[in-house]
Image (cartoon, rainbow, N blue to C red; front, side, top):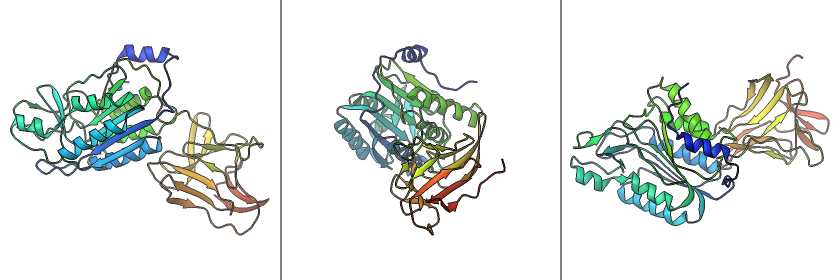
Amino acid sequence: MRSGICLLVLLLTALALSAEFPDLSTGRRIALVIGNNNYQKVPALKNSVHDADDMAANLTAAGFQVSVCRDVNGVEFERALQKLKEGGAGADVALFYFSGHGFQIAGENYLAPVDAGSSEESILRHQCISCEMIREVVESSARFRILVFDACRNNPFASTRGGSRGLSTMQGQAGTIISLATGPGSTASDNEGGRNGLYTKNLLTALQEPGLDFQGVFRRAGELTYEDSSGSQQPWVSASVIPFRFRFRGEARSAPAVAPASGRNDQLAGGASLDTFANLTSGNGRYRLSVQGDGNLVLYRIQGSAADPIWSTQTHDPQGAQLTMNKNGILSLVSRGGSVLWNSSKAPAVGTFHLEVQNDGNLVIYGGSTPTWTSQTAERQ
């Protein structure tokens, strides 16, 4: 199946074969995220601020130090870039993300602040932000650089002499990867029926998958976008040699044991927590409780390679969440921002509490040996 992503084959081959490249997955990572909706002189967009907010939350959950800007004018845009340059000195990974209007003039790409708007090419060049300038700023900030432009909507400056729709090809230095929401010269969907632009929606999904390296994230986002658009939108990625390994969220993790000496993975002790992407699994391996990257807590029935959800908290937070078995007997799902997303009922008993994923598919909180709460999902064996 076509993925719609144009990655350089030599880069992928070299990176896949080289185990000696340093791994930056635990290094210092910074990001500047910008979303522009409310354009003053050209048609406004619906989803770009949502794109920026959700991308900032996702990157924060992945360990980035994020600066997020909404509806910025030209002066604010340049000021944000200068802060990225100054604050990013010595960082291992720097990421720039923009959602809004973008276009090309004579093969050079520009991003539009909210106050841009002119029929004169020379004025428009001055009002907008050159993508090459952005690339140079980001490349001065860190060892590994990622630039994402979800800015290929219909060109609002199409009447400008020399203006063209979409963005043109871009190439960075060694250690830079550049992603466009669609292929050069093409336009991307703002996905007006949804919360996010089509590419950003799928990039957010890919970023939440644990264990994917940066290649896998962009490949997966491209595949999803190609499928959702029936092939009309084909994301594009450019990179030269990248002599680093990097994962946004690290390897897939298992749940911590109920206690250091217990060695059990079907229980969560009072006072213990499960972080985003962690799991508890029943002793017979047929049921798995997962803290998902979207802030939902889900109990799955495992049948071979299939996983069918049978219970969930029906919660959502793009930053992810943490599940805690409180010592008072209440099980809590809390967002990374500290908001309580879900609680079990108050325990009627006292004692030492723990949560258990039972072999019949039931979640049970015990106070000592007495059940104090259940998900009522027991299945006939």
